[in-house]
Image (cartoon, rainbow, N blue to C red; front, side):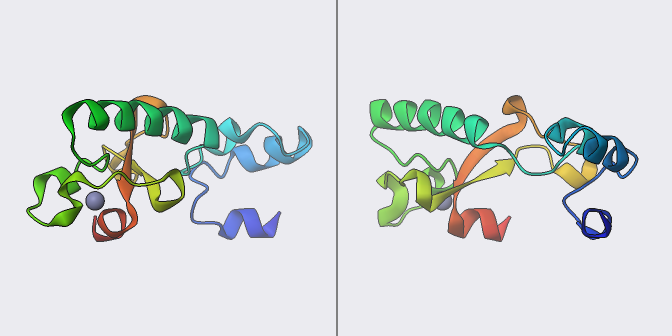
Length: 109
Ligand SMILES: [Zn+2]
């Protein structure tokens, strides 16, 4: 429990007690900052399908560049979920606010 309070990913500390009482399964109570795997996979496949059609990278930031990565198709393991609207500024952790960025761009953001 103390770990959860110290966890910077947990935004809503009030929900921690309820979360633990409920068997630590309902992560919505924690208002978590990380996207779940289902969301990631869904966003990844949408982005990748679009990228394939256009012949460009499935990292939206890579498509803006001028190097070889412009048309690179990243694998799911090479790409990370990112909040379109910054989480610390109130951006929600849901599918509408999720984009997949290659690790370089995710880190640079
Ligand atoms: Zn990128």
